[in-house]
Image 1 (tube, rainbow, N blue to C red):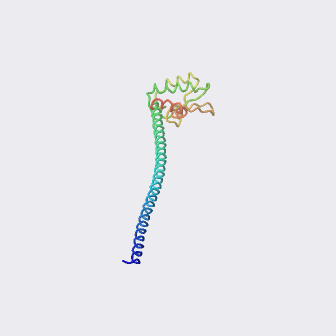
Image 2 (cartoon, rainbow, N blue to C red):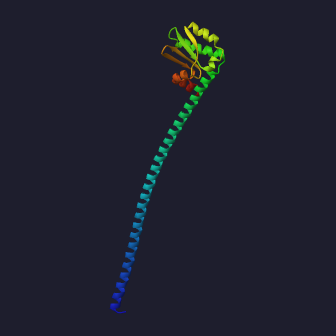
Image 3 (tube, one colour):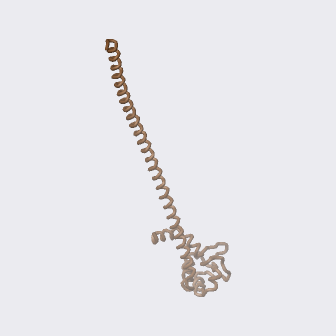
Length: 190
């Protein structure tokens, strides 16, 4: 091999070694770049997952809160319906009392609502068919007279003093005292 060939072989060997070094450096750089990209992608993926988990948690909290509010409103509504049913049943029970108990109950209400003498008490058609003689005597002692005209009410009475009417209907009294009765029912039921 002559000098020229040796120089060419040496240049080729150096070029091959240099090419290997360049390839190794390129592979190392590519590996480092891939690792950086992978790490950056991992960070971005972790950030996206964290944001999504946070949003999902907020949505769940909001949904839980909405469900709790709906549940509370439904319970309140059901309690209201139950109490209204109890109050309605109370009015029906009073209206269904035996004659003596019923008219004794009405007399107690009349005593509390009487204004002065010369008032007139009106009963409904059903009550005018009951035995009200003792009630009639009792209200006379209060200065009230019992009208034979019927009142358009479900039970109880209407007390009139000329143009003034006092509603002693059982359902009206219960409506008037509803808040007090609701408090009592709440304590008893809940």
